[in-house]
Length: 507
Image (cartoon, rainbow, N blue to C red; front, side):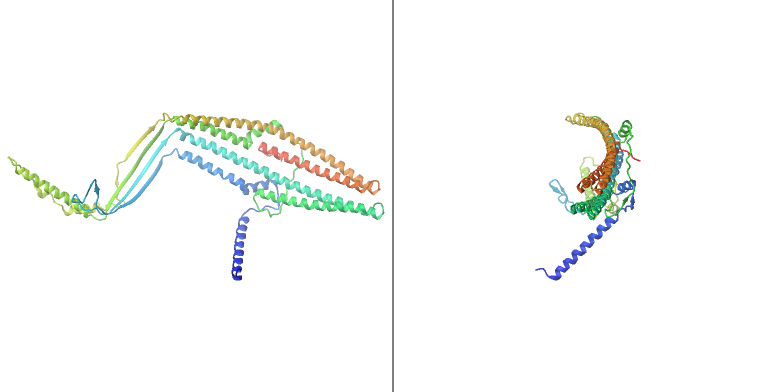
């Protein structure tokens, strides 16, 4: 069983963690942009471009594409590197083959400290590097076209969400109108019941119709709230904000010319532009693939230095003294040989071989190089020319692959152009059909409204039953809904046509 004190501490800790998470979430959401109370479509577009996460992710690709271009130009410049290091070697007798310096009469070496530096410069050039900036620019153009595609999709999505809110507002208006009509019918049936013209059955049917209308209003209001939150979601802002839409869409006869729309779409459609940019990059890729047949040039040069210092000069002094002693012994041996000749030669002065304090001080002075007393190595420059002769048919394969990729992209561009022309023809026909359908549905709505008014008059006169009145009311409600559906179907087809053209068509 959990102790009460422990339980309270856990509960308080969980509560504190919850408060921290809520505060963090509030800070995150609070950083988002507030939406004006009266929101136009243009304002919704601007806010979405600043806040929509998907669009911003795609927009970030532009910076990487810019750096790819800079990197391609940077590859044409020489490369340079600098290196430096220190090392240590412990004391001991040095091995030379099977002997040690101790065997030769030389003592063990002291500790040694080493330091070095090097500066290296390299420049290499081939045809692929020469073509790399042009290819990087073409790829950046393709990236910018992809960003335009994302922007076009964002415009279409925000416009669609905006229109959906307007559609749901009309649905709420129709539901409330239906409720008012059914309430009027209920009052009408109650009045007829009071004068004895109808039975209570008519009043009961009217009350049922009112109840159904109330459910319709509730559901329509929920759909409107859902559409509003989806719009705010597409804009990339908090969905708990209340907004009123300020832009209305009117039903106007489509007067666009198919040839003009086709010309605009072929020049501005973002998907087509992206395909063309990719084809340009592939064409440069063919030229780069040919670079495997061309020679490459490389130039290398550098500077380097080395420093060494012993922990003690006793070893160097002993070496120098050993060399002096060896020179004296050699001198004495030579003089002894000279004296044994039939005609003796004059003896050499062996006293000139002596280890002096000046030599000792020189050894000590030369042992202070670590870490920056470098001795420079000789400068060298190398030039190499590489000419590829045979590489196992890999060059031919890569060149053919680059050509096929270019040809495939050329066919994709042609396919996109043909598809765009067909889609524009179909889209414009759909807009015209939707416009005519909206006009016909408006006429049907007027006729259904006239029939409803006539049915109410006849019901008051007792010429028809309440069921027939409900039928007339249902017919008018359906005609009203069909007219709204047709109007917004027109706006949807225009939105789709604008996405194909790549430019707005409505003022």
